[in-house]
Length: 205
Image: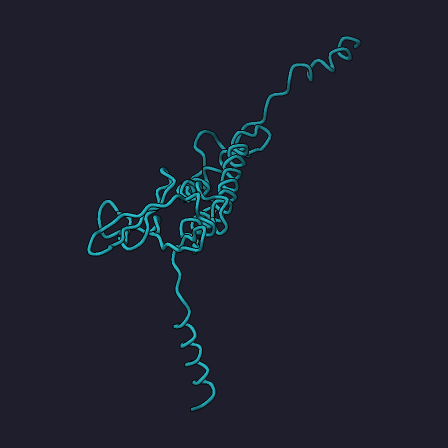
């Protein structure tokens, strides 16, 4: 066998030997519970429903617990543990967090907040646990709020010409119809005091 195919087979065997971890909670004492991902839903039904594997644990952020159904001696039993007992979390990057980051990058802070809020709420009871995505999600939320605040400031800033028209043009592709562009507006009439500057000279003559 040639060396290159041999290397490919070895790499494939190594990959198969590595354990594939999904969402896993590691409790004090080293016990591991694999749990369901609350952000994965079945879009084939209306309304979409979370995909739940009964063999995995179910986290309740409201109760601060995680429950798992087991079968012992033919009897179904529900085991419950507190989230406060979790020491480490093994959790891949949530898709909603990634989408929220993309929303911010595309200038869609409102959509970013819609995506990131459930992530923050879910990880809040375990925000200080190693492996939690709460801090990263909170940073994305702050970034989105900052973008919204900047947009609002730009909209209301009196000294920024055309701010409202530019925002409407960026959002809708149409120019603001509330008034003509600055270039099309008639020049302002000079104030009265400007005319009075020459009045003394006229009186002297």
